[in-house]
Every structure is written in C-alpha cells, then in structure tokens.
Image (cartoon, rainbow, N blue to C red):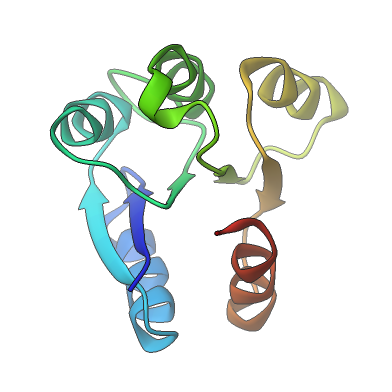
Length: 120
C-alpha cells in the first residue's frame, strides 16, 4: 500500500484530503504544517507528499526545497495543493522541485487520477 504524507494547516482540508486518499486505498499520514511534515518525513519514507502552500512555520515551497535536499526524497513526487494559482507561484514551486501544482478546491477523482500518474 502506498503511503502519502498529507500536509495542510486546515483541519477540515486535511480531513477531506485524507478521506479521499484513504477511500482510494492509500495509507495517509497527516501533518499540520511544513515543519510538522519535515519532522515526520525525517523518521520514515513516503511514496508521495501532498502539501498546501500557505501554512505557518514552513510553507509548501520551503518544505519542497528541504525535502529535495534529502536523498531519500530526491525522486519522491511532491504535489502542491493550494488556492494559489499565479504563474509566478507555480514557477517557484517548479524551481523548488515540486512535481505538480493543483488548485483548490480539488475534485476528488481528479486528485486520485493525478496521484496515480505520478506515484510509483
């Protein structure tokens, strides 16, 4: 079973994402912000990281950069799921090493479709 680290500072969004992913058969570990996610990623590997952009303590782009510095996460797909949709932010995400950029609100079936394309 593939394991996904779902990162969002909104409890309701984490719940919706987690429900969607678990319903599709994924094992989900939740993190409340980028710092929490980075700490959880330090203790185990994940098959995919799905992160919000705007969060306290560490945002999604900073989290992506820090994870990419770790050889364990060099090839792990990292998707940013956010309300941010500007080209400038998307370019910053790509430059940080993000695999993809998804805009909220998300369509559960589309989210699963994207994850199935990028996860190994």
